[in-house]
Amino acid sequence: MSAPDSPPLLLEAELWRWTPEPPAKASWHFVTITGAAADAIRARAFELRAMGAGRGFGSVRVRATIRGVAFDTSVFPQKAGGYLLPVKAEVRRKAGLAEGDRVEIGLRV
Image 1 (cartoon, rainbow, N blue to C red):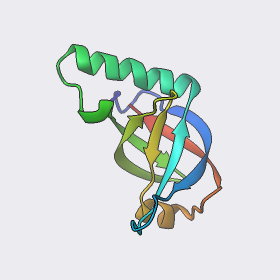
Image 2: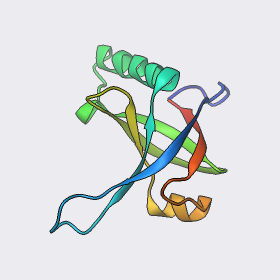
Image 3: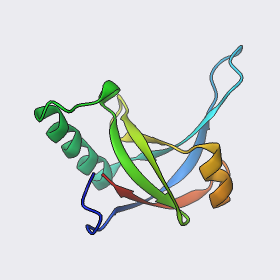
């Protein structure tokens, strides 16, 4: 992760829900990261792989902040480009988030 005193990457995106086909009952909420933030994450993933510290599925650990709620998670690359940031129910409750909300996100990679 970046140094704690370095400025976070800032982006704005919409919270969306993915629900699998039945019989699965759960659904997951994500934010799609694109643009300069995705480029910075991709560069970090490359660094980690070069150091032999790459993670499964090409994921990269991040510290995210949404509406003042900070949480540690991993982002996952998409085939079409960009990354997916999962947003757990606990984070959504604390931040007062609902599907379709547009949010500002701070990311430390």
